[in-house]
Length: 157
Image 1 (cartoon, one colour):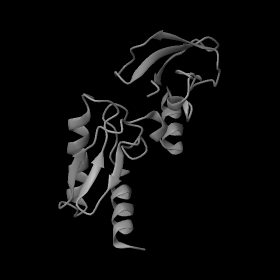
Image 2 (image 1 turned 30 degrees about the horizontal axis):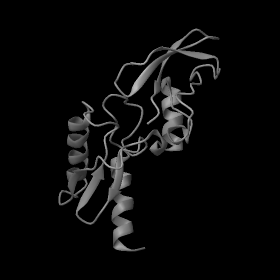
Image 3 (image 1 turned 90 degrees about the vertical axis):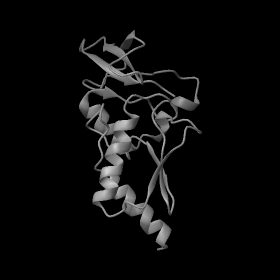
Image 4 (image 1 turned 90 degrees about the horizontal axis):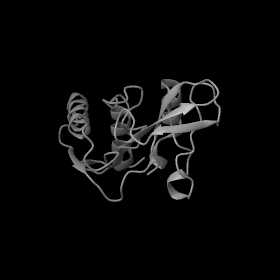
């Protein structure tokens, strides 16, 4: 294994413990915010430009890197290409679902399919959007027509 691959693996392992401050069930790695590791930097992309949690995420990443003896690594923010819900890992999608947030289907960001919501509580596809704005700017508020529970859905992007 090359030194670069070993460093990348170590950084991803360390940062798998950094939870998103707005969604504390999922790590920044599973959410797809941590994009790359180079020999001198960790590259992150916020879920959208202007995300209010970006500074808190950067501080948490910095703290974990420092505790792991990786203080030489800088944190760089890359806005292009823009973050997409397709970057959420399969494990992350399951964590979101268990927490009560519906992740969009994989590939939804690349297709004409918009916000196909499945209820994270009962699994019903009979859902409706209540508001385009949910608990955070990157989510929309939906309701299940079967179990009648409201839930957030990550907006496809």
